[in-house]
Length: 96
Image 1 (cartoon, rainbow, N blue to C red):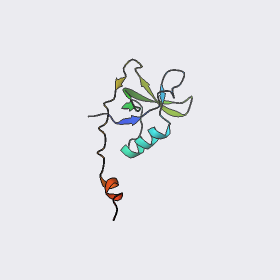
Image 2: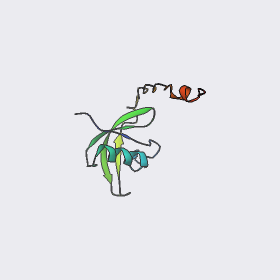
Image 3: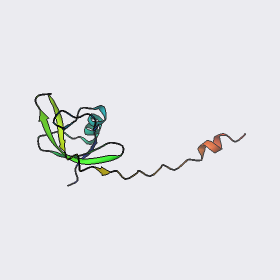
Image 4: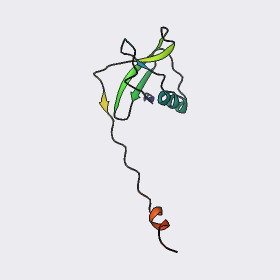
């Protein structure tokens, strides 16, 4: 089974190096994917350029969900293909 992939801000980590799962992009992805976080759940965390696998834990000290990641295990994301340019703009500039 494929792990859900959600946005993570890798600069938003706690003193133990766990990534906090409380930024807007993460919450939006969890909602869109209908994922409810649970202890031990496995996720793929990604930003615009990198991804890494992580395990979800609840941090009672901070009162929020975090993910334990391998800071040496980052993988580059494959670039997304560019969207085709539509010709509607050229048609709109033609004189009537």
